[in-house]
Length: 423
Image 1: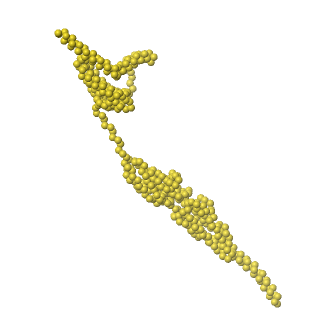
Image 2 (image 1 turned 60 degrees about the horizontal axis):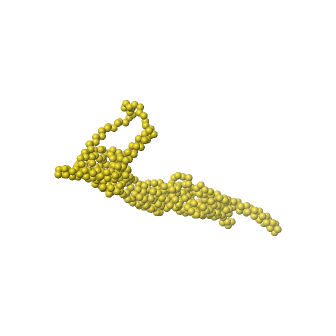
Image 3 (image 1 turned 90 degrees about the vertical axis):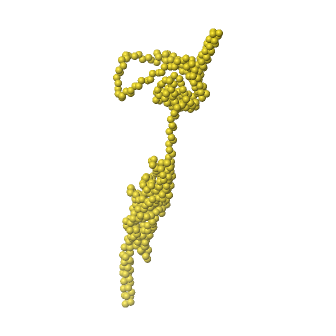
């Protein structure tokens, strides 16, 4: 009897053990697939660079991985978790730094755009969130006047990897848009130019722009930087124009005074610079008119009037003028007649524009070649050179002085003979 009871108990026990193991297996299987991300909520937008907390609940003893995928990047596993035999439920918590731009954990640089969270392994789940963080405004700004019409602005470049550029404001109005590619190293600079009305003080500020996402052309703006001021001085006035010289002849490197001639001279004005003399607007008259002008050097280039520039010493010019005044005083006593006045140049009206046919009745003329005309021209040049050299040299002065001495000796001899004849 007792043996039957023992056998019956062993049979029940043998049947209960497999059933209990099967029950445990059935109750543990659903726990292997449980897991969800509860924080942040799906589609959340973060407008600041604060830390973002990620939380996931998992159940079961199988390993579960949490990964984060940057905009346009690949998933990166940042944390893992799993339950135990005695406690199958567990959690995964991770803090994502949304303000990290250099040497970031797991290489997650916080650029603006859409990010993805995923659970993989014993459980699967996913969430998305977006970063829309504006850039930081430049903390310093310097303004330096460059001349009278420009101001150079300089500020430090931002550290955000997705900067799009800057806008420069002058006196409250946008003046320029600067691409971030124009910055050099860790500094940005630009020049604001003005027209003639830019004199005075000007105030400047800078606003930074950051992309909404790597592939978007839309931007998010920062606040304005601290203001900087610069003052543009008025340019100096232009130098006054030289006043026209009234009367007299001024010679640079020569002498200053008034040149008077007898029997007809040239009236007009002339100006010579760098060794040449040019004249304009003059005409020829008689009776000893006086011309005025300024001459430098010793060559002549005239238009309408003649002017002679000289580089001779002041003593030579003074001696020539003294001789001219003496000759003018003694000339009437010697019986030298005055030259007749030269005829005035006829006034010719300008011809209107157009094409004109030949009207003069000249026949065919022989053109003298340079070979035929060479000898007469050479002779004429020699005669002209001799006459010019005689008139414009000390030899002519000595010749005239000798002639005056002879005239005076002749006059004295005549008076001496006349007195002795009467005796």
